[in-house]
Image 1 (spheres, rainbow, N blue to C red):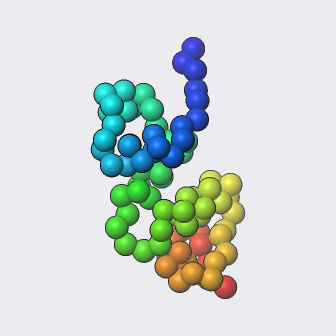
Image 2: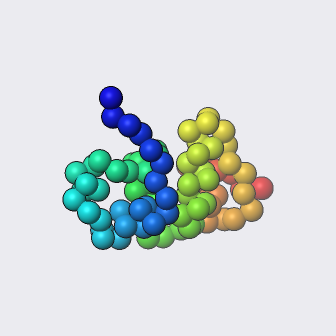
Length: 81
């Protein structure tokens, strides 16, 4: 059985910038909820990474995110107050 572990922000930063080791490139290491994290990192417009991660976590929990930020409100399942 493959052992699963969490990764810290320094590893995530290496994944995001492409400064990763071969193991990263082969998909041996990835953030929890991998694809949404990489999509958030690749986004060039709109709200920031943390807002995208917060909204994604609530969406996976089948909740709507409420916000006062108009850029964050443009995300899926996010509602402006």
